[in-house]
Image (cartoon, rainbow, N blue to C red; front, side, top):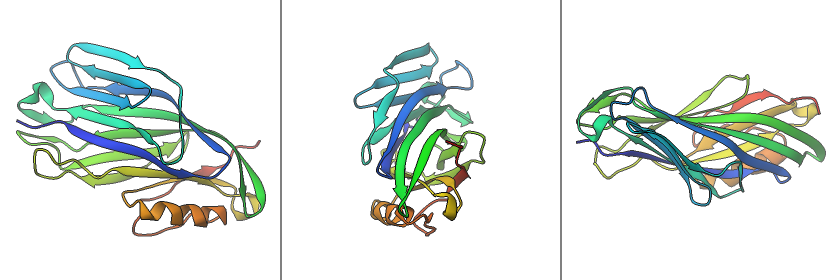
Length: 215
């Protein structure tokens, strides 16, 4: 019998002056035959979708500060016994706004983004091999972090941390978001971001990038 698949999400870091707010969360399941998808936050509550319907006990919007947990997603196999194919997913919408100082210049940010947590196919009596964390800005290409699911029943994929940054006009005038499972990479990514650079390193997954909106 496959156990649940939990994914921990953290706001690893963002530039000073920016505010990260979760504005909506939507768990969904392919049908009501037994699949489950849940999101929970330590302060805001939880929201879920399963065979019995949709249950919304999540207060939103809610702010998440640098270093804090965005939330935990829980995906449950069909009826908890034999689960085959694609299961549920959780879509998190957030808003990033504020004014940051990058390379001595003020950068104004006001945009929406998304994080979608899903998984590869469930394998009958086993959980999926991969937890997929897809992240993107509105109207921009998505990026995906594929996290290995341990074969043991109790094992969970590594926690994922997001880093959000922006570049001033002379550095490209872009909005960026990356992710990592390495806590030690967060500060380095932010150090580069303050200088207007989206740091590329093997410890980071790909940057989701879009042009900054005119302010």
